[in-house]
Length: 493
Image (cartoon, rainbow, N blue to C red; front, side, top):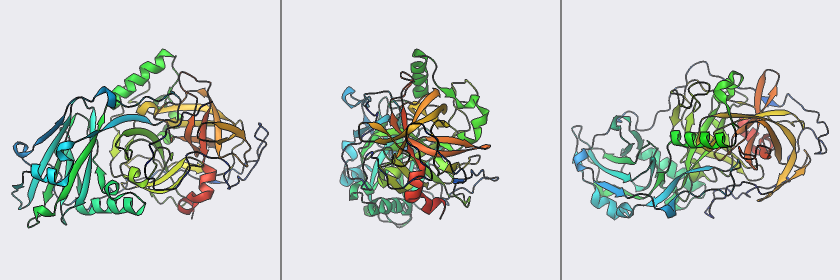
């Protein structure tokens, strides 16, 4: 059996972690033989979910007091255009359709015209604004792209400078101050990223085949203090709607295998804890995974976020994270996305990562949108044969529900998993009764029901289950192992 495991190219990784290993040293609070014999669970080992009664205060960027709409003249904005994506650069297709593989959505493309600081400086056409500042902009296009993210190398900016990004709607620009960008660079560098990687900021995705980068300097700032380049972009090959349509057609071809979470009101609370993840790997390729917002014991509202280490491999990747909330169907059975979907583009701080349980634990930099729920978690032993439920974004599409049970505990290597005991196994092996997983489901949480509540107890690593192979097995990294190894320091200090 081959694990459908996602492997990034060999690149500098912030945390010196193995890809997938067994034999963790943190023992469970209960044990079994690994062959279905009963476990004596300690169901009190849990953190309750938390639903804020009022909308959280929005996070204010360092430049939030300034104007956020575009101010540069379109006539003075040079266009840097790429042709259609060559077939040789099309996103790679995984060898298996099984879950546990991030869904590649974007491919890195080089931008020779803005590859260096000097070349970029020659293209900038500075203008004076009515408020006494200086502004210049560049527009980037990649023919046929369904979305773009610019990899902006920020070597230096004068204090008070602002970068703005926007797509077809300049009024909806997202801006980042020089101070914010410096904080991102320092965070990446302190975690071990190379100088260039640490200082590369990936713009938000606005959809479409064009994005504009605007740079505004305060009055009196020297233009030659700007040292900025755009060596590459990530070219998206599908819109979210196209990804959902392709997945629906694929699922229909083998028989309906996914459960629309909008048709399951009992899981509404859990659905409000789950976000689709869009991130850029260190090589500039872009991917989808799934993650879950977690509560801490104090219900502090700190936006702790859990996913898989094979998705978020380093702090540099965590800094690119965009999360899409309430990304489910508009109504039961609808192919349309919920109009209440909200995106956060501020990235995250990677607090802990471990290959032994394939876990990535982060703190988001933006406050979650109103209406979310911080999921509860269970950090005790789960009995074999216990019913479990997973909520995930297969193929990066609308939120789905899968229902199954715990077959056994397992140990995993890079290419396979084998049955183990609850004392030694770092993974839970699940079979599905309804639903399955696909690419993009990676990192999604699996929940156990205790009384009237559900609690996260693991995150998706990999496996052989899919719509084409519904009888396959999926493996979830054990939350109790991760909790005792490190997560309790943040969740229950």
